[in-house]
Length: 444
Image 1: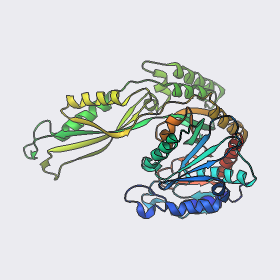
Image 2: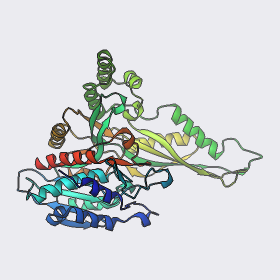
Image 3: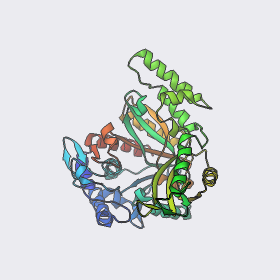
Image 4: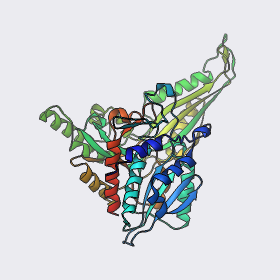
């Protein structure tokens, strides 16, 4: 089954769809859509299609089973390949060898998209009709913010359409999760952090470096960064989703011996119940800070015109990954107070808040979990909160449940290739993902 899936993915990867300003020469999105229409003819023949800019909304009529429609969303665009000289194989060749397709997008997310379209196309070719209405959204600019997706969500809202579940990318099937899980696990993201951009501006008199003044613009920015790095400025709180994650991890804890596994299991269960300083979590988990609420990272700094000139203005940019437990107003107030202390101006110049976590008992989560258990026997399913953002956030007001999961296995080195060099996917993994999607579609 799905004998041609490797060839189809190779063709998808070979068409560059790099989104964003300055990448127009590598944004062959029309060619890519035409390729999808050719390779998955039943999908596009049976669908009622709505154009939203370069994106496409596809609607499939159901038999009328009771229940709201389900939406599958996934993006066609990819990030730039970077220095192609560092790639083992050219990023837009679709090179295939020893059962592996190499190239930008093989994992994120043309591989999962190929799996879903293959499953849907095959079922439709068998004169299958879903029990309920199904929507498919092919996004064109997820990697650069998803403005088109916001338009698509607005169109659906205007038509009064709501969804039982929205399925999107997010987690995958991975090995040795956080170094504490035995073997493979299917990671279902039930929430996602928001992403806010802050700009700190320091103004100064400037002058010649031969007579350097105290508390110059760059120094004040440095003092701000040092204070933030040295302490904890945001509320440290382990949310419901991460507590669930730790408890599920405990059931499949890693260890060389039975005693080590039991000790890890006990520590994970203790960490799931902690509050305050979270000593157990900090001891066993190198990513504890990311689990305990919002984080801040300094990403850009600019200022100065020559090596011997004191700048009159220096600007520091920071990215805050905001947890659902915090509001933009709270984060902004904290950073404004710190900026004022160092005689700086702080502005929130863009971004989005977090998306509320979904209940793992809801039907969409359980339906996907059942399919994972069927296609990947023995693999545990673990909920978690995604640090990055997905297109699904634009549809959050149209549903009570979002499941962010691509049912495709990625070896550790393949996972590291996402947004990096040498992105690649195993054809067998794409085929297994298609089997999982076929199972899921059959339950709708």
